[in-house]
Length: 125
Image (cartoon, rainbow, N blue to C red; front, side):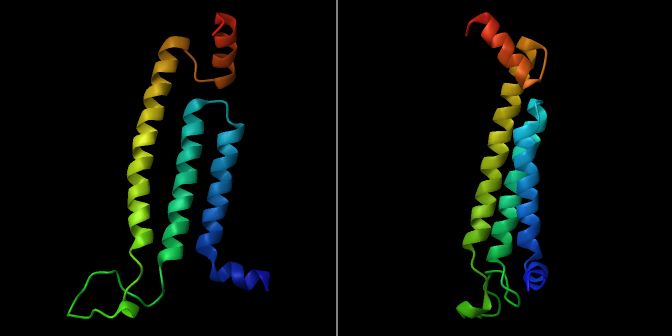
């Protein structure tokens, strides 16, 4: 029974596995660049999950063609809009995180978060 549902919902399962990989990367890595990559993997997993939930087999993209306006013909456009908005926000957040990482590297000459924390404690900040 469990295997049957897993094979039917493989997209959602892959999204959860990706989210777990990204979360573990975010928790266990000391390198700031690797933490940013982990957060991007988590973002991608959420977008995949939303896209999987928004897709309905046999329906079309919500673009009216040939005068067909029946609601049952098209998929819901809300998940697609959320994914596009999320991607734009994710790119902006990634750019900000990378710029802050560059500033930290220029000041401390390392990307190791533990070493940066130790130097901050040593400086008394």
